[in-house]
Structures are given as structure tokens and as C-alpha cells.
Image 1 (cartoon, rainbow, N blue to C red):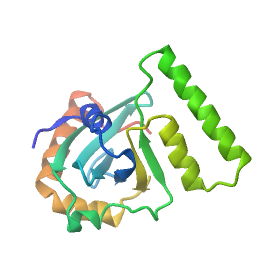
Image 2 (cartoon, rainbow, N blue to C red):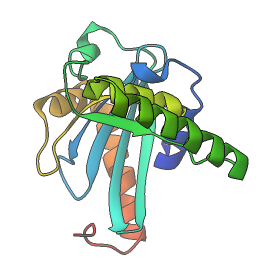
Image 3 (cartoon, rainbow, N blue to C red):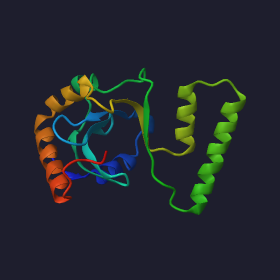
Length: 183
């Protein structure tokens, strides 16, 4: 397992070249210490674990690693399914002005269609993600002030990664000379 910067992990997710709708995520407060835990999983890619903290409102720092090459039945039970109403998306900014204009036009047309016809929240979300060419999106379980039980279960499943990533994040926090995250 290779520990890397959390942004590098997100780059892997955006470059995965897989069904963008197949991703699942679960996140919450770190078990011990400041920051958050996040697991991102996709059946065709595997599972990533990220640990982050906000050094200040404009600077999120963190580490991550790929912890599984596939989602087996045990791991899959701890990741949310489509029934969960909360959603997440990973986006990459447009590479240039032409791409930005093209995405804006597609998004504008998508919103117009949904404004003029009956729609569901899920259909609107999926169509917006498609219009923006989102490389990863799906259901997410997230607790801002707590930890979901399934997050604890994943931490136990990947206990070695949990220990290593926690130590790396604590070292990062110490190097940044921050005793706590930004509140």
C-alpha cells in the first residue's frame, strides 16, 4: 500500500475511465484526532481511503491510499447504495475557455429540459453530472459531527491502512504546526 497526497488519489478517481455513476462514498469525523475519514469505492476500480483536515478555510490537506482492488460482498455492505438520497461528485475544472463554454451550454440545456418537464431529483442530479462530464458521482453517507457505523466497520476491515494513514496525517498536522483543524 502506497500512501500518497489526497489530491493524487482524487486524480486517480477522475482518471479511472470507468462508469462515473458506479462510485459510492462514506465519510465522517476521524476516530481519533482532528479531520475526516472518507472511503470512495467503485466495483471496477476498488476502494480508496482518504484522511483530510482543513488547515484553514482555503487549504485542505490529507493523505490517502488504495486499500482494496475490488469491492467484495463484505466491503459492499458498508458502502451506501442508490437508495441513499445524499450524493457526491468529483469534478475537474474545464481545461480551457472553449471547454468551459461547451459545458455551460450543455448544463443550460439540461436545466431547461428539467424545468419544462416533470422530473425527479435523481434524474436531475444524473443529467447534471452527465452534462458536466463528471468522472465520479454517486450516493454518499456523511456525518458532519459524528461517524457512521459503517465507517467504523471499514476502519476495522482495513485496520493496517487506518493505522498507517492516521500516523501520516498526524505527521502532516504536526509539520504544518497546527494543533487542530480550522473551526
